[in-house]
Image (cartoon, rainbow, N blue to C red; front, side):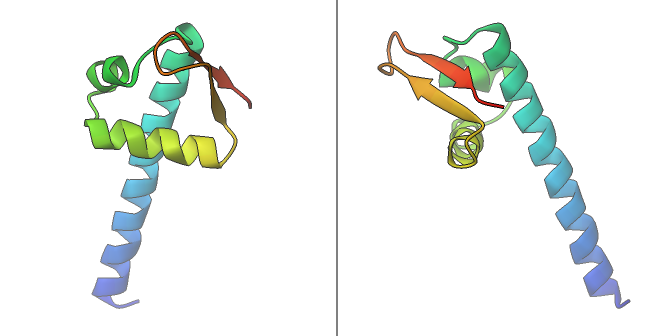
Length: 80
């Protein structure tokens, strides 16, 4: 296997692991506090605002989580 292909594969695996860890952290925090805000998720996970938004959007699209109620006063539901 060429070096470039090996490098790309290694980077892909590293990104997958990072995303999995971020999703796991976010789900744990939501489970512990369903009313947690994206800002609180940023602080507690160390992710950027965009990182939190991206992961939440991904989980919503996959049907893992759902937001119930308004942005202020609503809560998260874990579907899995």
